[in-house]
Structures are given as structure tokens and as C-alpha cells.
Image (cartoon, rainbow, N blue to C red):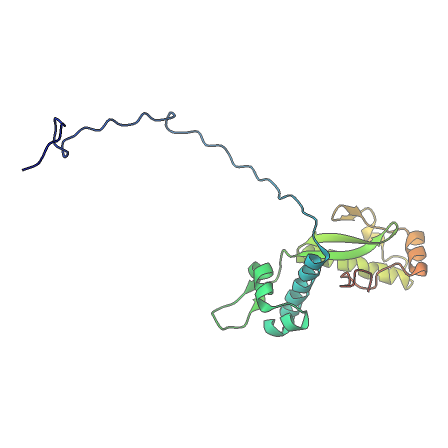
Length: 191
């Protein structure tokens, strides 16, 4: 026998009033808009780590085992996996880690600027290769090839117009301001 404490209906038959909906159904959804992340100022240590990871991925791409590339570049394998994990591939657990053909790593590179070497940030292997080709053309020009910079007139990389003026490049080379390496050095100056 079921006990009834003041309710006129037993619990199994009791009617519960439904809540009123707060809005009309279906709710129109807002479109998500892509908002670029705010660029934060990176510390020198963070820039160094990113450059070391990019160098390690480069070494892996050229056949060096991942653990050795990590050791030679002064970073751990775990750091490489954290920062460049989507740019690496492994067929099965325990298999060799290899680098994909292209990556989207952020690289800090130096190019000749109007007042000396200018550091730029480029994302991806394709953009880094373009900077390397420009640097090669500058070095060919400084060795005497007058037509080396013809391809680069009026071009920009990372929003910065490339220097193709013979006088500016020759003056910077005489002063020793042109960087000799593509990547900035870990000490902060030109290599």
C-alpha cells in the first residue's frame, strides 16, 4: 500500500508543469568569424627555441634521426614533438620519425634592410625558401653578377620590400652589415 502525504495523486501519476522556454525554437545561431590571434612579443629565449626546433626539423627532413637532430640543436625530442608535431610523421609507434615535405613553422630570418640586417618572421617552409633564394641572389650580386637581383625588383616578403638597389647593398657589404647566414644567430647578431 502506497502512502499519500497530502498529494491528491500518487507519485507515479503526478503531473509536473513544464517550464516555459526562454526563447523561440530554433535559435538562430551566430556565425563564427575567424579572429586572428593577437601577436604577443616573444622573448629571446622563445625565439631561440623556435629556431632550434626549425633547425631540428630541417635536419630530420635531410635524413638525420630525430633524437640526434634534437641533441645537436640543443632541444629535447619532446619539445620538437610539442612545437612541430603536425609537421612530423611516424608510420607506427617505434618507427622512425620523419618530417613532412612542407611545414608551417615560424622562422626568424635576417634579410638586408635599408639600415642593415632586418629580422623578419616568416611562416612555412615555402616562405623560408623564398628568403633563402633572395639571400643567394644578394650574395651572387655581391660577387659580381649584375643580373642576380632582377627577379626580386618590387617584391615583398613578410610585408617588407626587398632591397635591390646596388648602392645600398654595396655600402652595407663594405660596412660588414650584411648577414652571411639565413637564420639569425643565437647570440642575437649576424653570424
